Image 1: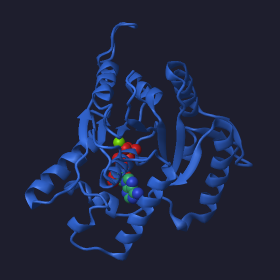
Image 2: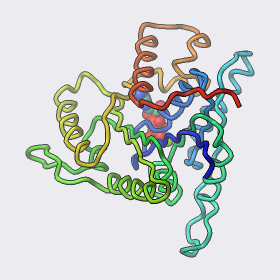
Image 3: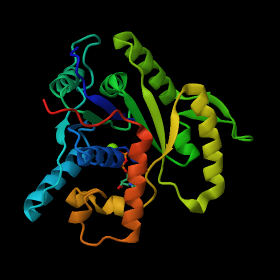
Length: 271
Ligand SMILES: Nc1ncnc2c1ncn2[C@@H]1O[C@H](COP(=O)(O)OP(=O)(O)O)[C@@H](O)[C@H]1O
Ligand SMILES: [Mg+2]
């Protein structure tokens, strides 16, 4: 392995609709805005949300003649099912090759589909930072930990936490590296104070047991859904036609999210 490696940020959570793809795009564009060289790998070749988002972005920039920062994008599909066990895998090989090709970038952001696959596990095992967005719901929480129905105390970690544990072991064996796991509380709504407190308490307890940090994610805002056709993020304010107070608040929230990830210094000296 080369001395220089991009810092790998993997969005993972075996749950669709938790905000992985939306968060992946926003993290990638925010880092690129800060001058970092960023590549994005979309492992959800079926939905291609991140790839399509960034394709829309490039098309919109061309059409309007805007100078928008454009992270590089690659899409890697899972191998077809039914291959003989132990047979060489095209998908995990393609991921390794892509990461090797992008070793000179500052960051690579990997978006994964909401399911367990060899490809997703391979990405997890290479992660430097694992970001798990979670809606504030015990339905989402259940994939990380199970809670007692009476007390809401954590009974035991669930399968996604076990998968991360395995990935951490694999990473330790491979190069002695560690994974900083950050669970993002996404789409928080102040209207649900009691549930928010219960989920928060359970998360704090589980965080100590399985080793993750908890940080605020993106709050529930229509703007996050509206920006997709143009491929914009809240940091492309100049390209947005109207800038409201809510946009400014949302941008501050995105900045806070990036700060909470505590990533290594972004910009390297130009080679
Ligand atoms: N902070 C947010 N506020 C409002 N809508 C959101 C937010 N984050 C995601 N969404 C919407 O929720 C849906 C699922 O988000 P997505 O990022 O595709 O999740 P995942 O990749 O985990 O399946 C999409 O319709 C997306 O636009
Ligand atoms: Mg997705």
